[in-house]
Image (cartoon, rainbow, N blue to C red; front, side):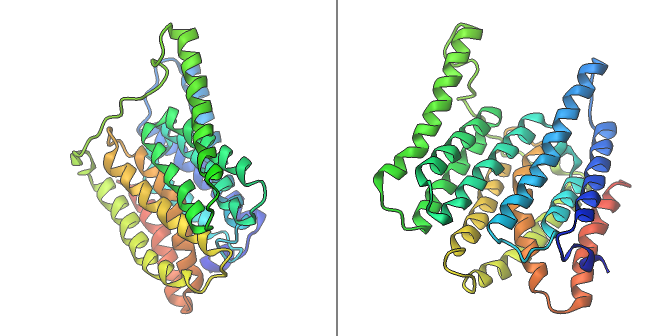
Length: 307
């Protein structure tokens, strides 16, 4: 029943996901958000919600455009369920904005498959990742995706390898210029002294333990089958599937390095894991097992609402 609804891409699926996202945002807003100025408070979180839902739309676009799934809508449902499991991810505006720009960069990186306008796509990818890094420094690690894509596509053109750095340099110059004009120095507007925090005690709550366990267990189990199925994909699409896997590893690394363990750092992991788990759902042949698997993904986030 549940699997049949999202097995095809339908407009009603987006309405369901939108409803889940609205509900999650409302819960996060009432349980965790703190605001002093009422008007400023609601304007701020309205933009955060808008960017959060736009991120889901971008995810759906890049998945369908690059045929990362079998034309289902599981990935947007799973992404929304992850938000529900860890609603704090919708409150850190810097991470929400950063994740959105990373998805825009991923869209350009995955589109390298066509081998058209390669330099423009590489510049855009570097530019968007640099913008993301302005909001949240450790998202700069996603630059690895650009060079991984060049390797997977066997691109040996030295100029192409330089282009992403030009995109980075453009953002750096703009950032320095803004800092000089507004703050009268060079680097105030740039976060160039990243911090690292390896203390995970803040995750020692029932919500985090259950939510993170769901992410890790379902993600690892699905990744095992995801890696096995990459070999069966068409050669043109194999790089895209590998890039998704690397993105998940980078996102996990960001979670580990994150200076503030507030839950928002998990957001970078949601998109690649949603794609990986969707691919696993689509290869499950036993109808009953697929229903149970997806049912648990739905039940756990709703259970966490009661905690």
